[in-house]
Image (cartoon, rainbow, N blue to C red; front, side, top):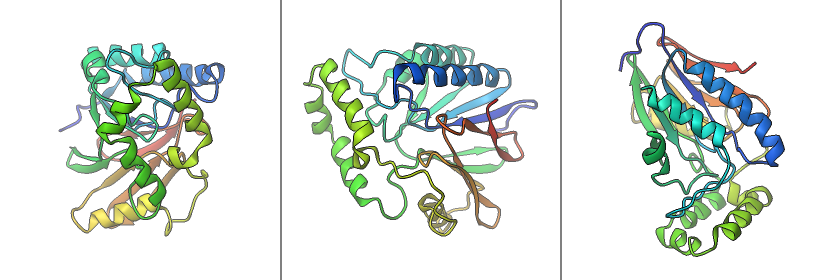
Length: 251
């Protein structure tokens, strides 16, 4: 795809809306909606790289309440003809077809390749990739198993949502979160994952979330790994203008 002149592609990740309290989340949500409103002016596409919510589970007829401002703004942008791509994270693993049907947003459960202006991107949330984190990888297999999800749906939503919110905060194995500190270029496991992928195919940009740290690591000749940071502490997002990718801070 060629990006039209004067247009840009926007990337954001790790909002964790709903946490730690409704009141604190609402402040952050309003900032994010303001960002989306600004991005709409010149966006060729918008990529949301997961953990938009601190918890999300789709029952057959029920979804978690709240996030009205965000969902409404996303629907408005999608209805205007701007494509939005969503990659599920470790806190919104249980997303099915609500975004597609209600908002017109395409949802991905694994990293995907995109090509814009002859630049090749590999884009994903980032959880469960690269070396290590074996406990979370095992837990993810359990959580994404169709039978496990079927069992969970038998919990009344008031119980299921409350239980999941508690575990999301208290159990680091379930969340997959690590301390948000830089591990060094030789130890950042998503950068190591990207280096392995380069052995199979050239990518100009690897764009991930999950680590909650804005970072840029050159991993090969003309290949760069970027982590988008978060909308909890850093309020960072990525922009590709057709020639180069840049991390920016929201005002």
